[in-house]
Length: 417
Image (tube, rainbow, N blue to C red; front, side):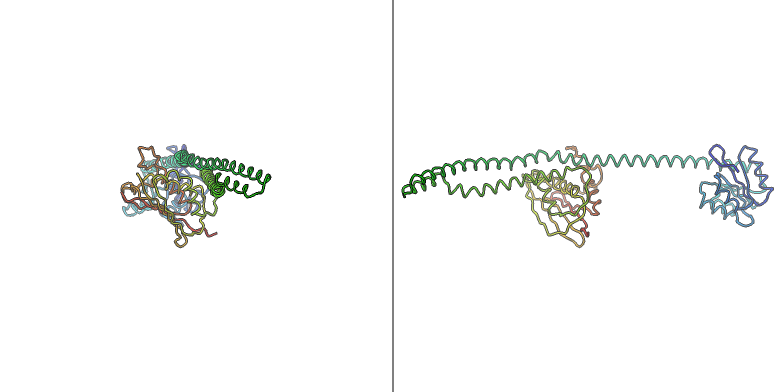
């Protein structure tokens, strides 16, 4: 038995007549085509289990398994093997039935060598082309797989670049937010220092006077000094100054912590998330982008927790809030509404900005689509947000009308753990 390869294609003759097998082998081998034969469909199947074969010449009528049955089983188990049917019946309907069943050719007995060779060579040519086709498909699949990996890596890098771009945009505002509370803390501490000197002077004088005398006149002088140094007002003001200082330092802490969370590396373990708290932290982070031209209205409802990655959800909130602020030209309102709907929660971020035209509204979640050409937008923002929300088994929807603002609604499943 000859195994098939592209250089030496093997042909199997299947006929229950020994003379027919010998005749076909002689015709094919005379043309240098490797060939062997078996005398039943069952033996043909056994041959195919152990050998590779490009082509079979199969008699339609045989004892036991018919040629049509062998054709069907060959197509099911060895679809790469071509079949040419052989028969003494030269009828149009039989020939069409064989071809419709999957045969690649039909040869009529008694054989004419030229007819056999034409059918066999055409079938082998088709088999060779299909083999090349399969090799090209495998190579194409490997190339596509590699391209997919490279595209995924490029996408991951662009996601990171988008985050870094957002951080770069907010860096100046964050620095400003840090400087402001630091400034009034320093000012308050300066006032406290001056007040302390006055308090010390008063106590020193009072102590000296008391040591020297205890008469009414001395007490009168001490009361006069207390009034002139405004000791009562200072003591009353000290508590407020300390409260302001504590509030300022706490604000610095929240801003810095929010920035650290947002700029953390990609790896992040999922955890239970308080959405209202995460929104507040994100507002602290981007407050400098909002406060000069927007009023932020919070309509937070008590919510169950969701399961996910707070860093990524914070990125979603941040991008939507900054986009909302950028859509407002002068002064406007951003309203954040949270509520529970069954086993999901909804976060709606609505603005009174310029709105989105319908021709853009249908495309804003497409990768690389952007209307911010003048500012060099990457077009990645909203497609990334949709990807992140999808990773959290949620949805993002938008409603907008030019001149009437936009509302982005996020839906996330409640954490059931």
